[in-house]
Amino acid sequence: IRVAVASSDLTRWEDPRTILPLEENGPGSAAPKVLSGRLIVAAGGEWILPFCRDASPLTRAKWPTEERAAACGARSPPLDQATSGCGVLVSMDTGATWQARAVPALSAAKSAAAGAGGPNGGPISTQLGDASVVEVGTGGLLLLLKSRTGGHVYQSLSSSLGARWTSPRPIGALPNPDAKVHSFRLQPAG
Image 1 (cartoon, one colour):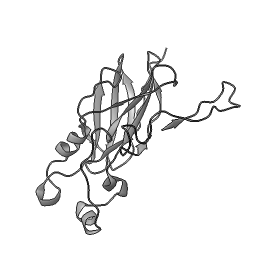
Image 2 (cartoon, one colour):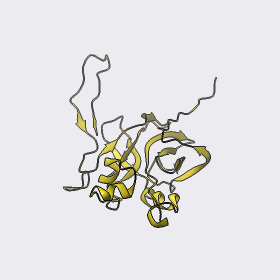
Image 3 (tube, helix red, strand yellow):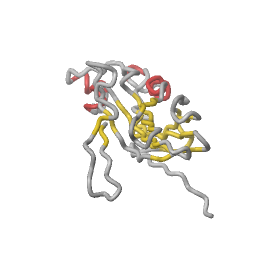
Image 4 (cartoon, rainbow, N blue to C red):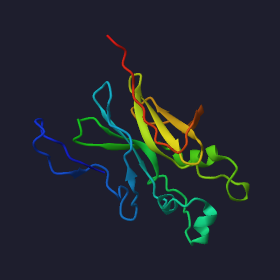
């Protein structure tokens, strides 16, 4: 993920710089990153940008079923927790430096939330992604995720600006037809 900042009069741009490299955990750890939500500025001035990354070639290829993927010779390796999942990029210094803070239990939640329904009655992947974030309270974050196969919007909460997260879980009766989720905080008038 690269960033470029405009001058205050919007007439010049600085050279782009990398804030989250493709191989963030060393050589051979390449994982595509996706930014789908908007940047928010928290009450304390922190810049928070939701992102997702997925090292699974199967999800990048978007095979409709495991059986179709297998018929074409594709294999779905297990998701690497270090290079898969969603979370937020946080800058404490108005974009000069960034830190990735991932939702730690995302891979486990994919399988647990899906339940039976996959090949031979086993779990299926819920494929959570396209994160959107909103500040709740002071230092609290709500991360909303779409599910391509689970049929619901999922949520994960943090009370530490993304340093720790709850396991993603579906939001009750809020269905999702594989559409991006966008969130924003309403400010009281006056």
